[in-house]
Length: 246
Image (cartoon, rainbow, N blue to C red):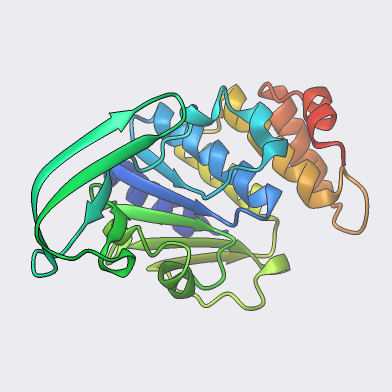
């Protein structure tokens, strides 16, 4: 990753108010890196949403609670007016469920007539981590997130896992190092070499996941240097190992 790339990414992040993070949720390194960015961007005063269908249970220790991770909250239920005239809406809520009641004045409503989607402010930038085909993701898992359409994308991936990356971003940062090392470089550059304890813990968890707990052929001198840097900044390797059990 060149200094020019770091400077370009820093400018985009500093200039952006609303930022969405999209991680490859089946990959622990990707999600750990996304949460590290989440902590850092929150610290910078950004409005951040992490788009993830199911947060990996193994990584719950990295956040105070699932509610801590900001997720789009404005959920819309839509019925075309040409299908039916709705004259009254009310709801009932108990400990088990929420029921929305619609009084139909005219027409008939079927399941296929009802659409569900999230409505949020369009992000200034979307940051994807280890996502190979963003367009396919939009058409499948992200279909309810229409507010993402048309937003600029910063596509971050590692060459170690990116043979089929579609280079879909306005900026495509695909480097030879691990994803965690890339994110460490970005955060450290934006924050002048500093990194908060929470982000450091997330990133060390990412390195543990990436290297299979510092075993195998992915180990490099740079990996150990990165791990030492994170521990110096407050990351707790013992707690990480107890939770990831890799």
